Length: 142
Ligand code: AMP
Image (cartoon, rainbow, N blue to C red; front, side):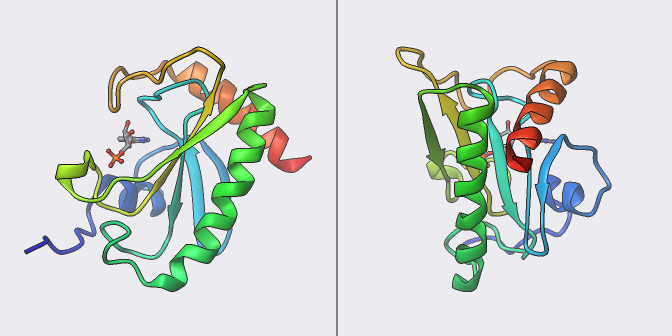
């Protein structure tokens, strides 16, 4: 049996403002912020405010607003980082590689010939995250 949603998971804390994040976008239903262990420059997480562990237990009404923002962030991150493409990833339960149990979608700018770094690999410097967040925010605003 799948575990219940934990209201103290790290993304719930970020959504409540109890833990800092480099936010690039927020609306009534969705927040986007930089992944602290990026698989590539500009790696952004798009997170619905509605609580669910992942896609499997989410209310289907979550997906329209969530993927509208995934597209916005993908376009903005591609432009901001001058990328050639964008990988969108989403994991469900430990067997899939999920490590944080609040639904989220990874948006990762991609560059021709450059492989992804490992999932949950090295922590990025805060100043690099802040710089990339600033570029993506600027691209979202234009
Ligand atoms: P997943 O394995 O799909 O559950 O992804 C969780 C992601 O959250 C990983 O890529 C981590 O690098 C990232 N992550 C973990 N803690 C934080 C945090 N405090 N702020 C931003 N990203 C985080």
